Length: 90
Image (cartoon, rainbow, N blue to C red; front, side):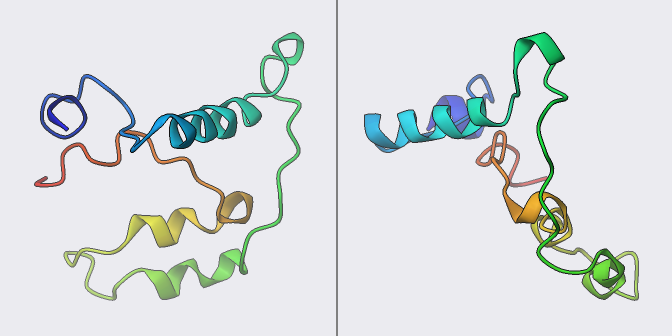
């Protein structure tokens, strides 16, 4: 917890080995092949129309919004969040 949420030294916090291996597999599945420098992956259609992004943002731009919802537009919403527990007070 200290290294994931306070110091930020580690990137992911897993409950057990099985969860850890599943996360590693998920990350590696997204890298593509070395020969093509990772640009050989096929993107997936968005979960919903990209034109709907405006509905995800508040009219008052000083108000907070959920960036997870904005990012859900791309690649079918498949996201491996990096350092999810770090910087929550920011």
